[in-house]
Image (tube, rainbow, N blue to C red; front, top):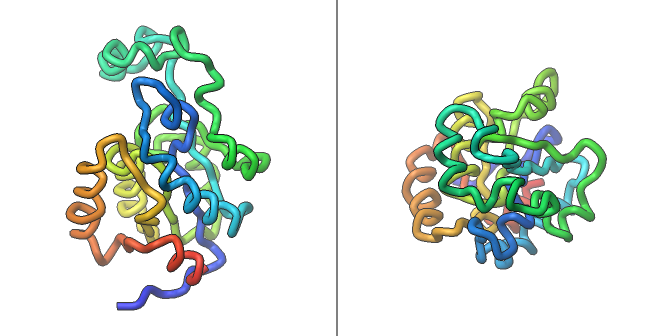
Amino acid sequence: MASAPLSQNALHVVIDMQRLFAEETAWHTPAIAGILPNVVALSQARPAKTLFARFVVPRNAAEAKGRWKYYYRRWSSVTLDELDVGMLDLVAPLAAIAGPGSIVDKETYSIFGSPAFAERLQGSDIDTLIFSGVETDVCVYASVLDAVDAGYRVILAKDALASGDMKAHAMVIDILAARLTDQIEILSTETILNLW
């Protein structure tokens, strides 16, 4: 079945394309290098319709909420007591594209946990969310499921997504998301650009 053209109310959501994941940290995701050209292409196609999510970390585990305290005890090397705050920045090619108000910070896996994202959607005509970024099986998938629950048309840019665990990435693309064909479309960057 051919995909319908994208409306002018589509929003490209770039998840966590940050130095924190692109460089040598405990959360290094080497596959970012391979998807970056496609994420850039999507972002450049409609910069005003692109939003960049940044995963922000607490100063230390004690400042985290609830069970996140345990999480950041395990990953203390990526808390701000140990990490240069500049590592939270977008990777250079995307930082150059990001305009004022196009970056949203989140403390949760899903971008829907960000009050700034909720405010951006509230009262808008956005009907479609196109996802790119990392990690497919964590922050991207959490965001995708929330988008499905909220009733958006959801598109995964399959060649603009990656994970530190590419087997888990493939599991999401090939099995989990593929189970929801009425709600999630899995398309190439080229197809998305043609539909847009």
